[in-house]
Image (tube, rainbow, N blue to C red; front, top):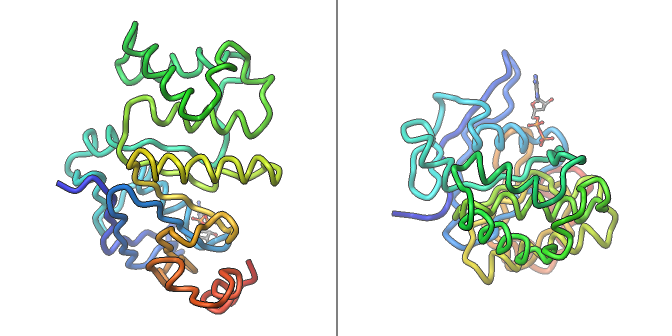
Length: 240
Ligand code: ADP
């Protein structure tokens, strides 16, 4: 059974407004896929379908081989999600935030503590565990959310524009961290962004524009000799 992510012929409309049209792509186990698209491309809509906030009869989503429509519990169990809007409780410490999430997944006691420590260690913020989320900068809050998304040991990690609102240094740090998680731990990653400098040459690239896939493949092969910014402009008609 595949441990990656598979989307087949997915379509979605808000009333008469078509937001996604016949979207298909696969992310192989252990690969980092950048879902690149300008504002309004349909990235958030796709994430809402991937996380089952929305449902559709048009198309199929498989997470680690589990069909989202037929076996949603298993599919969601295999998935970690970092949403675009921050979702930490600022009045709780980092550890309390993660404890709460662990409890939601039925984890408690020594097992929960070990998993939380491991997740915080992976994101290099274990030493901040006792601090209130409010006292952390934006980059560390985001790292905490990524650590939280990993507590239940998912094989697929989804991040919807996770660097929005961060300064350049924090943006770079988060981007590097998640690429490393993918390379070193075999996590399958789907990273939505409208920023070409968050995409590495070694990434799989999926370009979404006006609800349709415009290109997909290895980033280096797709862009050839052109900077990714130019390739993006040529593919979508929109400057990155
Ligand atoms: P992105 O995340 O790439 O910016 P979205 O998924 O938010 O794109 O939006 C895709 C399209 O769907 C856009 O044209 C947007 O205006 C439209 N859209 C998004 N949410 C709604 C909604 N609740 N009602 C109607 N149209 C929507």
